[in-house]
Amino acid sequence: MKLFAQHGYAPGDKMQRGVQQGYIDGAILSPRHAKPTDARELAGRLRQAGPECEIMLDPEFLATKYVDTPNSHLRYLDEWRHFAPVQRNALLVGTEAVDRVVHECLAVQRDTGCTSFIAPNVYISSSFDSLDGAIALSFFGRSQAVARDMGIDAHVHATIAMSTSALANPRERASFLNALTSIEPSPGGVYVLVGVGSADEHGGVAKSELLTPEVIAGWMLMNYSCALNGMRVLNGYSDVLTPLLGIAGGYAGATGWWSNLQVFSPARYLKLGTGGRQPLCRYFSNLLLNRVTIHERQAYAEFVPEIMNGAATDAPYMDETTEPHRVDEALQHWDAIASLAQQAVADDVNTGLSNMLARVSEAQEAYARLESAGFTENYETNMDYLAALRDGMNLFRKLAEI
Image 1 (cartoon, one colour):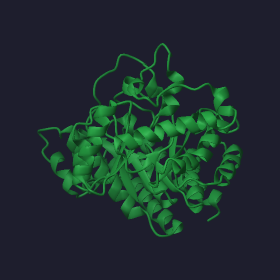
Image 2 (cartoon, rainbow, N blue to C red; image 1 turned 120 degrees about the vertical axis):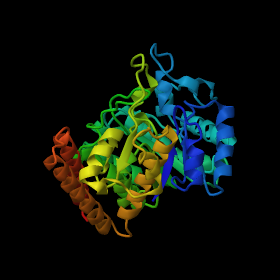
Image 3 (cartoon, rainbow, N blue to C red; image 1 turned 180 degrees about the vertical axis):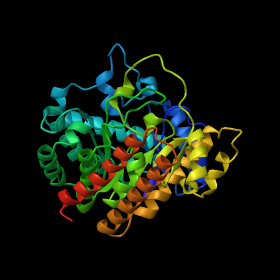
């Protein structure tokens, strides 16, 4: 399974180094965080970093609903020619408006130097059985046809962006998936976004809405169904769920360096406050399946040394007198997620599920050892998180009938 960088604020040379050192396979660029000329230059640097680097750009068309909103926070999106709102009625009547939007979004990606493409769509905020759900199916159905007419022979991923509440509704999800996989011509790929409530620019995203058995199982099922129908599934902002989605048939996951690049929220397009401090630097432990602060890593390792991954990216964390650079933090995070996926994903789904369920059990045992050593803070929260992973995989197995 592949892993891509989710581009965002303050990229520096994180993505180039991630590609050069083999921790990521490419990047999903954000027009919200780069002007068109800057995005082209960034794509060029990524190609130089790795000849096999896959470069995409999420058109973020779904954010056009926030144009003219008093508290919108669109950054550079207004400078991109494809970013223009279209009346919902026009998108519902025929395919002319949809085709025009898809054409413009794919054209700017071609101009940017993308090697693969992401088609636009709207965000399904509450229910698949809605006007947004109908518009989403129209975009999904026209993406491949428009790309073919444009002479694009690279991978084109039709976007499906939905809220956790929509994804967790079993009846509507089943109906929507049935309609999705019946569309002809079927797109060669699909870009899946699952949105949660709110996020600010630098962090503090509450993942409780995303990390429920129903949402985890639903996201895995979407990967499984689309993959069975020959689609290459690219999962945006999948972060720690990347291995689970790979087990279900996903082609790739994506994650970034700030917490709002690890969970998707449409609230990123709104000003929610005045900002705050940068988040604490963290270390991703494959044993714990979780991030811990620098001080927690130091304390935990004295009692459970196995929380360290034993990888080259551990080195910046071993000097307890200094904090790792943010670039080192990003590289360590990508390395950990990618290696976890590599260890868990197997040729068949059941083997992959068994691999990951065993990792969850190991994490639970490690947290129990830490609790017995006196580390009781957030113990119940961490155990609930691990239980959600376990129950989500078991529910997926039931839903997929495997």
